[in-house]
Length: 89
Image (cartoon, rainbow, N blue to C red; front, top):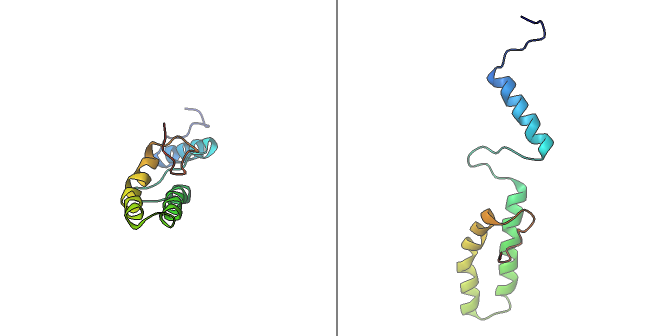
């Protein structure tokens, strides 16, 4: 056996995967963990709706608020960089 051979342990694999993700610009999040970039995208959607709600009738403002959860959920399917809450085509 070579003196340079390293055993492939779970810790070693974790380090290799983390380093590869870091180099590629990816982050690994634990279940339920949130990242700032995603939260900021959701906040932009809410801000856009809130700004529109102040310029329309009560009924239209209510409709904007009722549509807010679906607008935030739509962020999951938005292409990278297209997370301003605008409808995707």
